[in-house]
Image 1 (cartoon, one colour):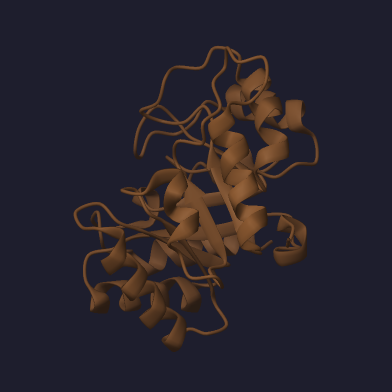
Image 2 (cartoon, rainbow, N blue to C red):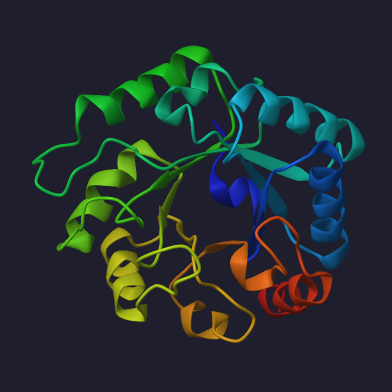
Length: 230
């Protein structure tokens, strides 16, 4: 399997999150991300099934064959590993099956890892831990440590969409996992990102660089890319 640093070697990685709506909208927003200097994109579905999202992904790979494109299939959760194309660069899963009060990770977390190995999928697995709209986590260091063996990139967030994560939370999680990659997936903007640079390896960004839920702002994407590419 590929490791995060084999794929993304620079200090900070910038992945634009595209809230998919139509084929043309997806392609247009990927073009904005690539031209602005982002390292890749995640396509995510909200109001339609993953079958259509995957069809958008396939068209996008034809148009952008050398650009990193991952998927977050909200309606499939952990089972998405069985449906995404074998060459998909990344899979982001919101409910990873790891709970704070477990002494060891649940069978659900272990099953996804076993499924991945059985399928021979070589992409990067981003797993949401201490994440928005999930059960509140008091000991973020403990849950982050539990997650390390099961995912390539531990992905966390603030309290909700567009809400910045507490810097102390990010620092605590990073100190707990050491060199293991940590991503933030809410509330990042060109104005606040520098506060997180010492602790986060990867930034998954939508709201803070967009004009609307589905349309990126090219200037803000470029500005954030310039900061993260330093």
